Every structure is written in C-alpha cells, then in structure tokens.
Length: 282
Image (cartoon, rainbow, N blue to C red):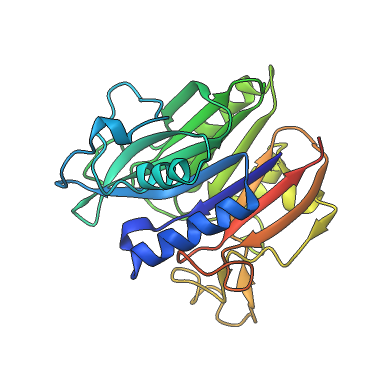
C-alpha cells in the first residue's frame, strides 16, 4: 500500500492550473492508494459543481455544497478522466482569506469509501475564525485500517495551542485504534527538529513515525529552509529544511520507504509544502 499526504495550498498557488496538471501526472505515475490533502479549498461564491462531475464523492452530512473550482473535486475528476477509479470526501472547516471554503480531503484510488469520521479538535468552532480545526477520517472497502487527514495549529498559539488540540485528537483515535490500525497524516506544524514540543508530544503518545520506521528514506524535508513562524526561534541554527508534514501510524507497520515527493526533483513543486509518500510492505 502507498499513502501520500500533502498540504496542497490549492487555489492560493500561482499558476494553479499548471500545478494541478503536474500533480495529476505525478499521481498517475505513482498510483498511491490513499491521498490525504490539507488546505483544500474552493471559492465560496463560485458556481456550484454540476452533479455529473461529482462521481465518486462520499457526501458528508451538513457539509457545504461543492463548487466548480473545488480542488478535491477537480483532482478526482481529472483522475477519473484518465481512467482511474477515484473516490473522495471533502470537509470544509473554515473560511480562509475571507473568500475560500477551506478544509481537508481524502482520496481513495480503486477502493470505494465505506465510512467517514469527522470531528472538531479545536475549542474554537466559528467558521469565520481561521483557528478552527477539524479532522476527516475514512475507511475503504476491503481494508480494516482508518486513514485520517489533519492540519494542526501552532504549539504556542495563546488561543488554540497544539497541545489541547492533540489531546482531543489522540483521545478519539486511541479508542479507534483498539479495533484497527489508524494512519494519521498531514501538516502538523510540528518540526521534527524542535524538541519537547509538538513532534515529541505525538511520539510520546505512542504513535509511530513512519519516516523513522521506514527501511529506505531521504531527508524527509517538506519545506526548504526555515518558514515563517520559526525564523526568529531558529535564527542561530543552520536549518537546511524542515520536516513539518508527517505520516504516523498507531501500529508499528513494516514500511519499505518514506520519500518526499513534488519537491522539484521528484516531480515538480505544486505547493508551498512538499508531499510525503510511504510504501507499506503487504
């Protein structure tokens, strides 16, 4: 099984259509089984997507309608047009930049989605507030594992600290993992190089970082250098890159490889974050 996670940045990216095409081309070559995406948006006032273009969608009760420029819908549509059976679910979480319905999505290539799980992890639940956070999980036909996509807040956010969000998330998924393996994927805003904060908190909770358990791996860097929010804190440290995006598993599964993808060398750059793809031994 191949699993991919990427913070897509989607409609906020310059040259969006070109990057969407590059993304599709990479997916068609790599053929991951599960794709977890964050910052998946649509323009809030765009025309509605025609029903015939929503094939494969697993609708989430109470979610906003899908609009024509919805990133997840367009990725799924292009994959289907290329002959790939693609099933997908998207959850809008908050209004981004005052104009985007922004959320998270999961795509399953080949296996229909049979169940979903959606719940908030932030105390803030105001759709107009950028700090609002929620997660989406899916289970696909013929496979017992659960796959979750998440975009976490900052460790030291005064209103919505990472630790509170993690406690909520971990409590829910610990119960879920009693019955099946759980994969937790996404942008955790958790640099692996910063000790005693977000990354170490997840590891100390009993989750396995597939980057470390993988037999073959690269640098793991999902952003080059140091990004905003960390420059001042790490100003005296030589940082060639940051591993902010992770794939964790509740079980110690046999991982063949963990590789960065869409980084400019392993397929063109399509977002302000690179993707991470792991291959599990069957």
